[in-house]
Image (cartoon, rainbow, N blue to C red; front, top):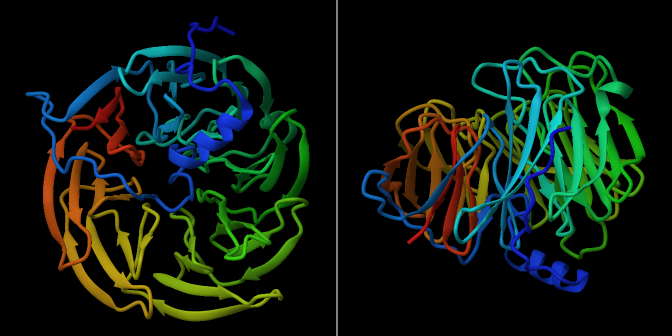
Length: 408
């Protein structure tokens, strides 16, 4: 393995108690943010920027390889993954100072699994995750690396050694989910398909469940109980949705209807918004393993982007750029807006705007509420496939060649 480029991850965290406090307050520790809902309450990034003049471009830093993963933020660090080489078999984890954009450290590994993928994707497609003390970098090759915040390797799992046929020719993309002291991975394809809980401290498998043998790119999602008495892990795929106990993988209930295999479910206030028949709203019945179907609307239909729910509105963006706002009470369409370009990344809601990045690198700031108004349109000039991260009024965007901070 190539040597690590040394440096500290911001030097911010000295005690575990401080880690937990700061981590819960302001970080963006995983795909779709701290709550897995693509929301950044209290942040208000600029609605436009200009690369040529530098307007609202705080910094940009070059990356050594490609990636469709999103950046995450832990303390003063921005963490991002990349893959390089002719076969994309060199895997990178990098940390940058959030204030200056200076690269603090880099760690590289060789992929142990399959590295075929679609030209628009990369082996660094899954977004990394963090528990505030450790970084869990997952790749399409089913390699899972655990590092501390200074980039020291703690453990490494090449899951392909255990499950040789767990792969597909267009690449895997499911991002890991940290739940307590477990890292949940969802690996689904035409070969060996499974979900597993990996011990965050040791890298050992705590539990594993079989999953349908079908191609799937959804990420596991955590549904937090409104009473905080029973959080559950949600696994979505083309065969439907299941809820598992994160402690032992025991199935609690299921929704056995066809669902999407790319955008992931969103859970908020005890209601699930599932990409199924457009969007289907479900409510788990307290104390039992049953579900109540609240409504279903085929007029709200995400494609690659996961839905975003904010207040009494749900926003769905399809691949062709049609952004639809619906009512969470019944699924009625409130407005529809056409954006330019193709879209893979999930939008993020921050301040008064929904930020939508298309695959050509254009970012649209759409006014939340109202009738669907574009308040800003700017371009990075480089392909973007990963969702932005939002912390303290700044957008952190990973393009194919750079990591960007957009801030006033």
